[in-house]
Length: 319
Image 1 (tube, helix red, strand yellow):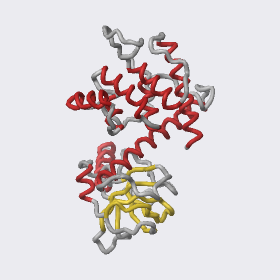
Image 2: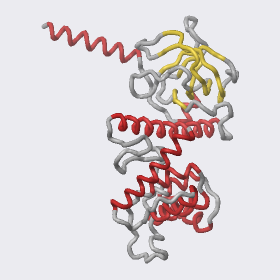
Image 3: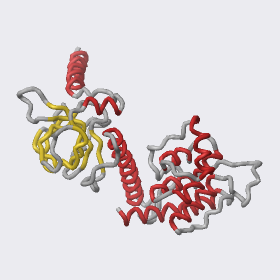
Image 4: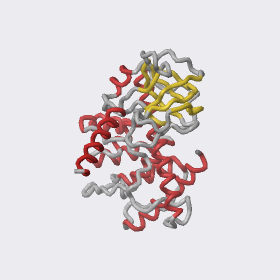
């Protein structure tokens, strides 16, 4: 009987708790933008109250870097009620952290602030701490938001890699912080790029044939496309048209195991993605770590590790 009563109490508590922190599902970026009365890039300058609240709301004094939508003045300090709307229960609003926040105007008289976070997934996106004095690129609000999210994805992937490398160093699984973790499952380019849609394959082949300018994000998609010849062409294209952002994508492409039997390429490896990834890396960086496209896997892996170690060292000293 006691167990039944205890179970009932727990169920009541959980239902009340779940109701208190109800967060709506992500509706798509356009709808999220439409629902927001204001969209801002801000910095958390001071904690004011409400930590540990079951509502996941907390109050902060914030500095507003950019206002992408609404009438909150840029460069102002404002008190806001913010909610953690991402998966997990660790509050992300540490002092001096920077965020892209989607807000709505409060209407109740007992509200503590004029604005608070939308209770929707995606309404709070942690950003890097630097470079937000300048307005994000884009002609529309949606374009600006997308560019901020792309920067956030890259930043979070880099931070994750740094943390993982340090933790492995702590338990003596790495000889130094400049050595990347073992395994070929690390994606230096992060996880924001999806393979190029099949319907764009012919268009991208034409871009590569004519060597015309194109959004590099499309090239990065082509670099992991289903068509293995397109992947090789994308890797080759980046050698003359890529930039610093291309390096992590090419590092990933060094591990491309696709083969192009029957193509009889000249020079050897010319139709192989990893051949062109290495060639483009050498052109973009001026570095050469002895990667040979048709070496045994173990030897290629050693050269890949050298590329990765160089990149980690460069990343560490430039961030």
